[in-house]
Image 1 (cartoon, one colour):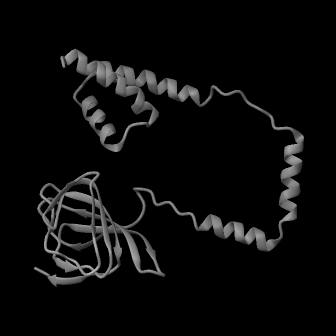
Image 2 (spheres, helix red, strand yellow):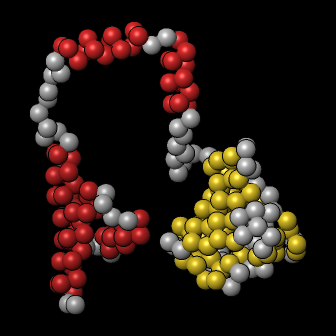
Image 3 (cartoon, helix red, strand yellow):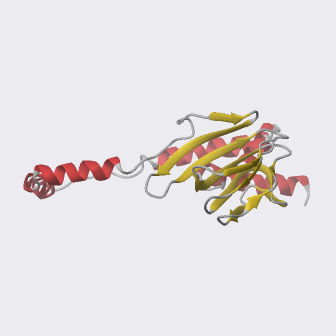
Amino acid sequence: MTDRAATHAMTDVAALYALGALSQQEARSFEQHLQGGCGECEAELESFANTVAALGFSASDEQPPDRVRSALLARMASHGPAEIEAAVKTSADIVSVRASEGEWHEVQKGVSFKRLYVDTNTGIATTLVRMQPGTALPIHRHLGVEQVFVIEGDCNIAGHGLVAGDYHRADAGTTHETTRTVDGTLFLLIAPECYEVLDAR
C-alpha cells in the first residue's frame, strides 16, 4: 500500500472516529496517527465532527399532544407510596462507575486494584487490576473460579501469554505459578475476594 493509499484509508477512519464507532484499540491507533502530524486527517476529522454535532440539532421539534401529558399525570397519580419506593429502589440498583471514579489501592509494589463490585451473596468480586512493567503476583491457589479479561498491555498467566482482548479462566482449586507482565497491564478480574497465597516472595 502506498503512503497516499494509507492516508486515504485513515481519512475514511476519521468518520467512524467522529461517530464513536471505533473500538478502543482502533481509536487509539487513529489518535496516534493524528499525533504524527497528518494535516489531511485532522481536517477530515474536524469536518466530520462538525457534521456529527449538527446531526443532534437536525431533528425538528415536536410538541406532544395534550392527551400524552394527561395520561402521564393520571398514571403517576395512580401509583401509591409503596410503588414509588420500589421504583426508586430499582433506580438505585443500577450503578455506573466511570473511569475517573473509585479508588485504587496498592496491594504490593507496582500492583494496584480498584474494586468495582462485590456480590455479598456469593463473595465474588469484580475488580480492575493494574500491574506496572516488570511486576508479578505471588504464587496462589484459587478458592473459586477466576476470570481475567485483559484490557491493556501484556500479561503472562500460568505460561499463557495474553494481550488486550484475551480472556483467561482458572477453576477453583487450581494454582497460578506465574502471573506477571513485561510492559505493564490492566485487566478485569472476576473472582472470589480472597485467594490462598502459596509463595509471598
